[in-house]
Length: 303
Image (cartoon, rainbow, N blue to C red; front, side):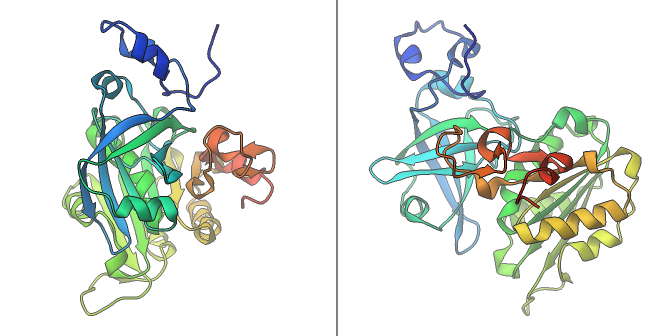
């Protein structure tokens, strides 16, 4: 009988009782309610409020079996504290570990910020629907992110980076509130110096250290030279920016069905059970968090 559990989840009891010769595909069977233990292997400050956390599953067979798509998320459990949905920021091309960008915002994330390398957490997932990378292949990709929205699209950018010959021109526009709020500075430097990546950084409120662009992300977008016939647009960031970014994409003649929006801020249980992520008739954790523009347009209250 075919399992109705989300893709990429792993049956805990089946793995515990399984012979050591069990293949990774056979382990992806589905008890999505039980977290797998994982060890924090590194924690790095990105800003005053965000940390990049690398985790590795303790069971080697789980490490080998875990797969995800750019744009999917997982449920992070801190035993005795609680659970929170977090976007996966590492690329599927990097096997054996998972990277999460975690903002200190609540009970679970604040407790995580107090943990250290070697501590144990739990992971459920991956959940949701990611970016349609197969549609992007052979085309140009315009990625526009704001604030913490860079976390899930970093997975997509690094996936494209590791499969660079499969994609056309890649343009990244990223906006932050202040220079100190810019995340992944080291990777931005790497992308900036690649001839096959076009990068634009902008901030709302500059300081004495900033010599780059000032203003909202739509300003550098207006100057872009885009071939609309073969360009896909990706948007992720604060809800207020979506309407205006999509408007500029349309002014550049990018088709609505070539625009994808990430509603990662709406994620909750990941199972479509709690109802907190319901937008109109859709469950963001199952039907999203990545939606085509037309799908998002038809969801009451999303746009």
